[in-house]
Image (cartoon, rainbow, N blue to C red; front, side, top):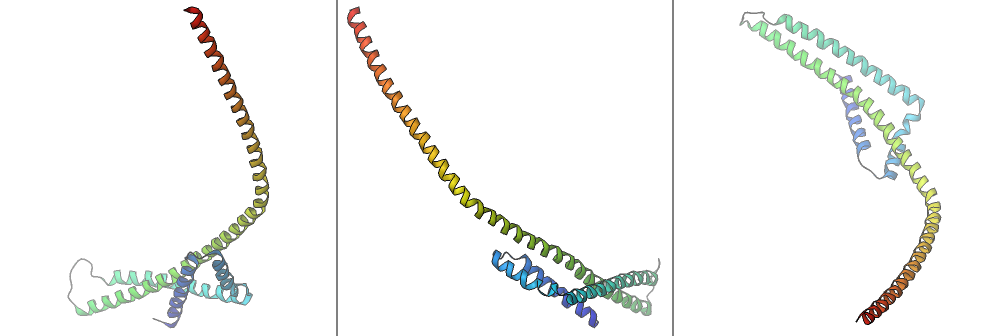
Length: 198
């Protein structure tokens, strides 16, 4: 493998590690620290230009490898015997060499393609994680602000409910007393009617 493909492979490994770090479920404080640490170099304009140049170079390598895959595949089709079997070893060796070149061209195409694709995924994942942290911070700030007002509102509601409960308890006691008095009156009337009816 050529040196520049080794460098692309190294970049792919770094991207995979970075994506793993972004994807792990850290507590929010640790995640915020990791994002701040990782995003520090990207704030430098020279670093951003270098990264864009590297990604542009990888894109050129990807396009070149796609062209090589296409040309080697067409060469392989041209070298394959059409219809009849030939046992000439020169043709077989030539065909295996073309297949090896096709394998290397495909390997390089996949290597560059996955590196570019993972770059897009990491960019989107980073923005989503940063947005998630900001949203959770805003939500916590709202909870803290509304927590103090909610506590006052809750204590007022509790006091009002206690007064209402006390008023209903009084009404219940009054109804119980009335029911006892009505029962006594009914019993006295019922015994008076029984005595007069006999």
